[in-house]
Length: 114
Image 1 (cartoon, one colour):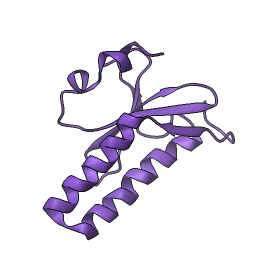
Image 2 (spheres, one colour):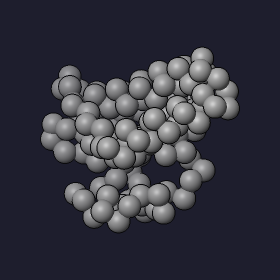
Image 3 (cartoon, helix red, strand yellow):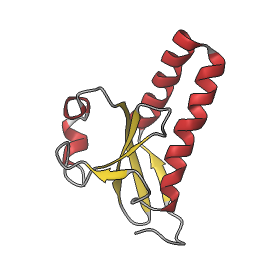
């Protein structure tokens, strides 16, 4: 599933909301500079998926939902990009902190989508 092919990444509205909320939280606690740096880290993790769904660090997360994959955000991040693979699209569904109860945060609608 990797190789020379470029995959298109599509962010779900929930993932866009997660992105904004993460950066808002970062800015409030650590300042705007730190939030901007983390925005870059999150963006790079999402864009890494353009190389394919099985990039280094990605793993299946079927215990959360069928067909779900997760990519851990860099060494300095504690968030996961939760996504599903279509062709030639990868749908980034959520950006969640690794300490969260993932199944609880992942809606039943998102669990049921294929």
